[in-house]
Image 1 (cartoon, protein in one colour):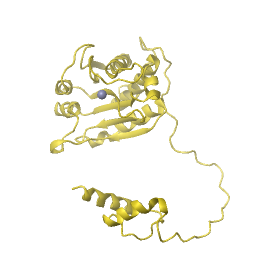
Image 2 (cartoon, rainbow, N blue to C red):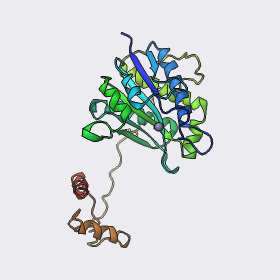
Image 3 (cartoon, rainbow, N blue to C red):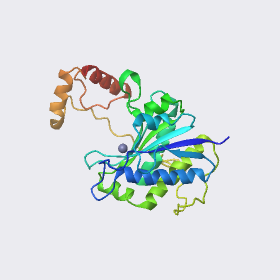
Image 4 (cartoon, rainbow, N blue to C red):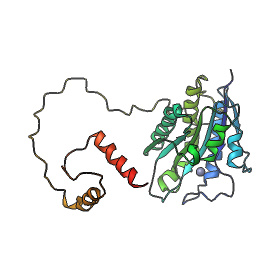
Length: 275
Ligand SMILES: [Zn+2]
């Protein structure tokens, strides 16, 4: 059965999202989307884009086109204040089973762009629906796998320099195609894609976990037990007193390690403060 993928090149000409030295998000994502289309089509996937080069359909229209498609990906690069680098991938609050796929898009992109993996994310809006209109409408159209990819921060000079290189957009497309073909069980990525000149780079990123030592480690002497001080360090005093005053902690053991259950309890208390 032929798999169907709908690619949404984010934004359109006239959109102001840009980097400091000439990158425009709408243009970079148009190029990336077309490379991805070529890579998937070469492997037998039916692919459409949500817009032609100069069209600018509404977000709901873009998502609405996803009816009958097996996977939808909206292509973006991020912006903040110029200091942040990293990639992240949003998936739908209605499809929690897609979290692992989004995590893969994010992790492999971050690996290729050599920056921080900001991970798989959801963002809920009104009524527990997805915040992003393009995700919301693609899910409403019945598409079972909906993603919004943020490949790097275009207002960061290092990420922008990567995104300005056509070959790097080809590498991103080959990487995304590999994930999509894997997810859809649609066969192997083609090594011969018209218009894509980079050698297939990275079928598998290096493992993220540290290699295990192959020989047993010699026994180490446990460190001497030192009782932590009973008052916070000078640099932490203000924050510590704030946390105690707001009931986030009871004020004991300021310099002891925190367990996961203690950490989520503090987070939960902080969350309750905001209401
Ligand atoms: Zn965008």
